[in-house]
Length: 154
Image (cartoon, rainbow, N blue to C red; front, side, top):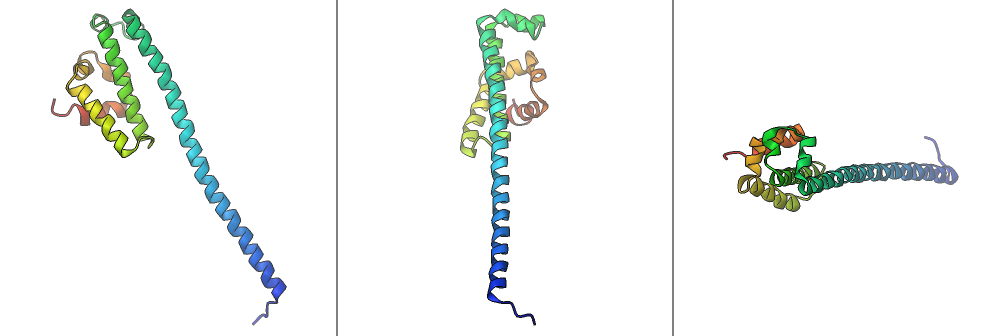
């Protein structure tokens, strides 16, 4: 058996400690990068939502501008109410996507989910979803969510 002296043992322990410190630093760096990625993604989505919010405000101020996006006569005749319905629908979509990204907690999501269900079931949003063909203006994931979980049984 090899006899290891104190200096060699000390060098070995120092080497192992340095390697462990590097492994721990890499682990926590990866966690920070993941958190930064989520923050950046949320910031981009919120920036897009702010722009959509401004478009919604313009449509409510001047409902005739809705024709820029949808020149269907049936939609154009709805006026400011349908412009606001689109605005609320995009808000619900934003909440849904924040939940998908893990930004909303379970408690927050439960509240917004109930709010969305009420808007679609009790108000006119569900009617406009079908009549104004709102489904064409959202992504497939949100469209499926509304049709499968929100408007079920209505």
